[in-house]
Length: 92
Image: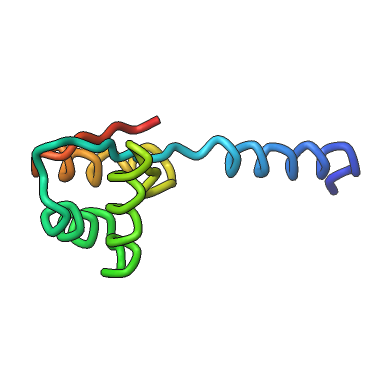
């Protein structure tokens, strides 16, 4: 049987995991077209066309945008696909 203190600690551990998820940040560049960025976000990050377009606009106007969050191991493959497509991205 779990006592109250153990249950609270368990809940806090779960919250900390959720808060400290990694993220892929995509950075603006002067090389890639909007269409290429949108296509790659759909392909690599499973974005809808609308999500991909919104992210591409944020990257263009703000200089960067978080395009995906989750556990590092899941993001590693997606970030590699973006990098191999010539985009500027990193996992933070």
